[in-house]
Length: 185
Image (cartoon, rainbow, N blue to C red; front, side, top):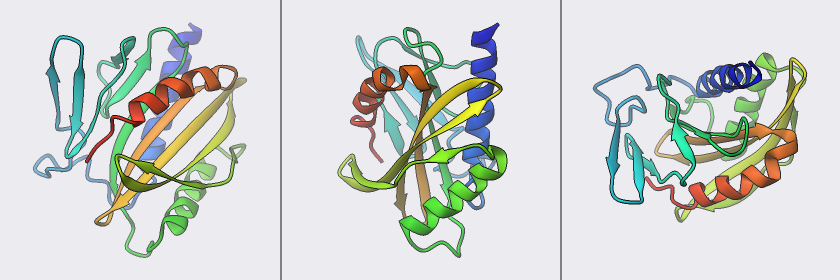
């Protein structure tokens, strides 16, 4: 039962985070950046998941959550760990990475008033500039920790959202980083 609740909460969180952008392109099936137009290709040991122009290679032991409207990978070995990919159109009034982070955090705070955000840092993902932060939230007694990474390019926010139970985050973050290292646009 606890696993069902976590999967449900992670899915709800994914939809909330996905709605942080401006006009999300997830409902326009003719758009080449549409995250619901995913293509799966397989080889012997590697599965590359493409979402529009973004792709990521999940690790062994990470499975695509069936029925999810966005690419959402769940760990089979770290209870409650998840990695999601979304693409949103940035609001026209947002011009910088710092402005986008403030915009997104404001939206998240409306959904999760007890969210605590850590400092935003600059990073590189697939050779591209990115900004990221970690944050925690208590959801009905479950302490969750998130790592949100934004690559802002051509008016779009390409988002990688990683989450797990707070107590397991350091372990899960090792896997998250390995998958983030495979991300490309």
